[in-house]
Length: 114
Length: 113
Image (cartoon, rainbow over all chains, first blue to last red; front, top):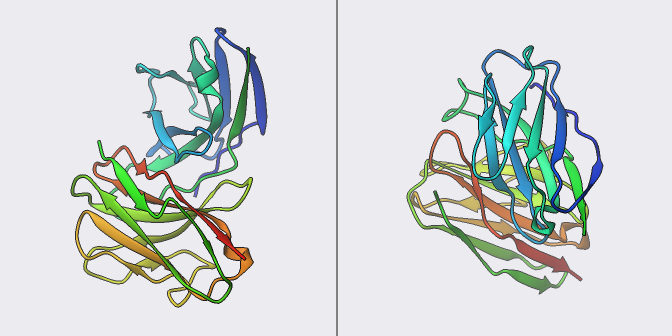
């Protein structure tokens, strides 16, 4: 299975943009890039996903490199509530609904400074 | 979307006993999963709960220790058997109603004395 590499932790100031990087140099052509986050004392929650093009939703933006070997989750204006562990996960589109399982790496712990 | 509830939310158990954790989803889902999160660690997949058949366990997890039931498309249970202090963890239920998004319950915090 393709793996991802993320920094262990990052810090950002409140109300500033945050760029969370993820490297996935062995990504295959059918792997979607998914991001989940886990707020303190909660289960993980879905943030965003994409395949090739950049994606935006109400929570964040996902910027995907042209060669797809890396991606960046962008929080446009961080709040204290965004302090969480962020997980970058690859999912093979052809395995979904068959034996697709979400395997979590260590993720990036994001600290927001007031 | 799917809203997942778990019971109990937390428990303190004695060594050698068993605890059954219930997971209820507010809609029918194709796939359900059980994860474990040890203190300060990431989530580890225990098994896929298959409706109408035996669960599929990940390496390092066995049915005798973590029996799982899934009687229908909205409900599953995980039993932690013959517990030891090493089983102290948060156990999370997860469900996937669509091909893209997976949802997680709030977790059950288990402490074994």
